[in-house]
Length: 143
Length: 176
Image (cartoon, rainbow over all chains, first blue to last red; front, side, top):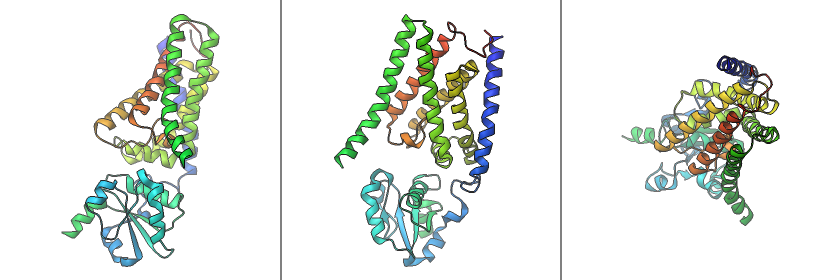
């Protein structure tokens, strides 16, 4: 009896939570992609980013040690650990016509999209893109 | 600057200490008291914590979806679905604790949620993942692993203590 009451109550609560959940999903439908963490419009391939030439600012979102060991030529380091410290050097090289390409280690890392998100939201920068495949893809394209 | 540094040092310490004190009080009083008023206060505190945690995440579901994805356990699509759903479930269960309606159901759900979250946090740590979120969404991004663990364990302890207390204190909407 107690067990069935517990299950019934849990099911009712779980079902009730679906209503506002659906509502919020509809409200935020344009702000998030259900297919991929980064909408296709905010991703860029190595070839596309290279084609931008000097018009692109490369931002390395990996930890300091990995940046120090190697990075995309001309890239500026900006990671979340030292965000406030490193952001000014990004803003110093940024100008409105430039495109910002953020990368981290690989396809599965999150640092690049988190840094890209903060650049858009907190630093209010337009044209911020995440490099598809990250550093690994860059290395592969060099071979 | 010094003030900011102080705040950065203060918050990661504050929450685990606060949660540990809360859990310790709950467990000690569980052993010595079966008084209704005390358990109502614990209900309010634990319910309030879940409402707060849910509200923070419901305000920024995009960030919460990214936080879930950090754990690398679920496919992105499922994570997005959960990011819209879980905060409301937490808030609803928090309200259920406070108003003692569907009390048992809320306990079952919240205990399951916090247990799954604990396992996921430990698994992420063992896999070397850098987890930047906790049960308070991105607001707890500066917590370290032990702070996450302390808070989660404290909440779980408080929930279990409350669950045990319902044997002595009948709830509205309960069959007992």
